[in-house]
Image (cartoon, rainbow, N blue to C red):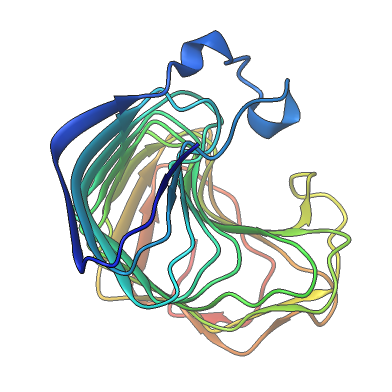
Length: 262
């Protein structure tokens, strides 16, 4: 692991490339396979971190430990299957104007005041909140003006079926064009590690909003929207008037979504 500690308000990588030589470890299974060093980069500064290329991480690429507001910009992550690009479990983090290629999620696991804006995301699992485990809160997640191309899904919230005491009280998406999804346009699923299995009830999800224009073009055999919530664990009215999904099929069973129809 490369850990970066600094009191400087600006860390500029000057387009330097870190190569983690992850091809010596990859088995396509990420954390579910053989033991791999992770994360490759741990950023423990606040301020601004910019202009760096990281490729071939062994497992998760970026993790954060900032104790004040941090902006990450102009970072390129070029990786392989099941190697998270940005693994986020901190507050007051902005990631912008960056490129993430060919791996797993942007994984937002335990976070408040997260902004993800003007990024390009290709060839992975999509923009993901979770998986949500027990006793965590993910709040005020704002996802603006990102381009998501050829991922398994565009947007996902996933919660462990056995998780308890957790909340996801606010996720706001606007201006995100999505193309080429193979599985789902949007999936919200409380049955992880299963997909659309028996959902748990210990993670309360509310106020999921798609505003502005979010266009999501998916494969013909993909599902447009799936919501799989345990009894009473998805609450409030979800305004999805800013979401347009085309190309697939598949109704949602969450009746409180307004402004969107399959």
